[in-house]
Image (cartoon, rainbow over all chains, first blue to last red; front, side, top):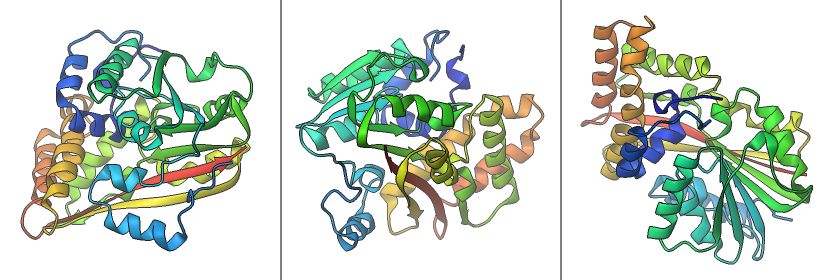
Length: 37
Length: 266
């Protein structure tokens, strides 16, 4: 299943972003073509 | 076998619930399994929940899987920086688990089923690798449980846009209320579901900042471009919705959201 970071919405993702903004900013800059989650 | 309250009495569990001063406490005060367990964390993402749960179970071993190598890299970084040593991270797909039958004592999933189009199938796949009498623990949110003061139709409509977009991606932002039937249909027994409500008012500024602003409203704000471009809502109405959500975090405002924790046994 191909999903890009912007498709990954949900309260779990939001919690991760709130806890680790730096980590998630890093994720958002990368290609996510193979990631389901 | 893991009993739900893990040695706590019902009163003790309620006391801990009432005293929770962080979301980690609220969701995970009872995320404790017996020593020596081998626990599968399915869909660990960047390891945000792993970082909370693994240190509470230092004498157990976690195998935390995710389909995304990028997420796993972040999870390893977070675990390393927190000196967590009882977790092995591994790339794996929940629907093609590379483990033998009845390999794990317990299974744990946080905010995973909300992204999966067929959660019953996922639970059935997970059940195969769970030992008899082992437990599965699920934690999910439910946007339908959101209410606040001052009330706002625009804010509710903005939230509904997030529900709709997650649905379009194959997920379900209102899955929390379905945990019992999902576990039941997947064949688990002794099912218990425990609502964990976040209630925020002026008396707890940490929750105002951490949950209303930085988590919930940030999440809704994050879908603005997509929601507007797909004509789910007008720009002005969406902006008013965000403004009204932020208003609940100001003086006199209150905010409620309920997470659900479900546990079933094989």
